[in-house]
Length: 235
Image (cartoon, rainbow, N blue to C red):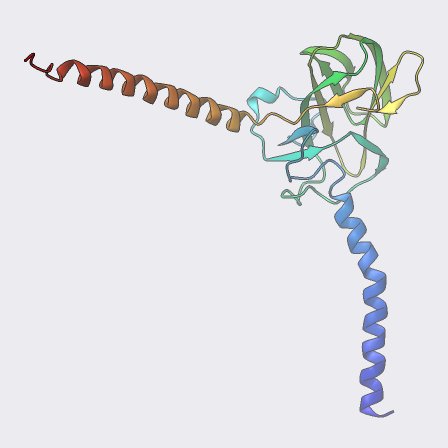
């Protein structure tokens, strides 16, 4: 066989191999976004990632832990499956981690809503700071549900989740309005607000305070200067 023919066959084989490996790479990259992306999004939930000690059996006390990364997601819809992809920005963690998702929402129609939280391993759901569902502990995919009366005002939501040993995961939050079909939260009857960034909020407050302080200083400086100006002599 001529060298030219060998090169042509090699190029063809490499092209075929590339076509087969590309979907696999793309799929793996997509699965790394299962729990959310680290790019900010409007009208969603913000998740903070925490590392856990090996053999952790329940959700930790998060105030004593330091977050190692942030995620943003429109919904919590991770059906039961194997997962070893890691997170965007935190690719090397595939087990013994926790995520706390927070956000705000309003309902289009006040009434009774049923929430169902499915997870592998433990999870908890808080609405307006109140524990609504406790699905904590090391366990295979299992779900718990609870009813909540919601008015038309703004409500806070917090979902805590932890993953024990690799590789099986699951995290889904469902919601059902009376006489309606069950949907993945937020569904058609709930509107999410943009996640609140506490750092940016404090920065805005600081700027407002400094601006007001400068205006007050300028006001008194001009007032003092006006008093010092000599009055014009009468003719």
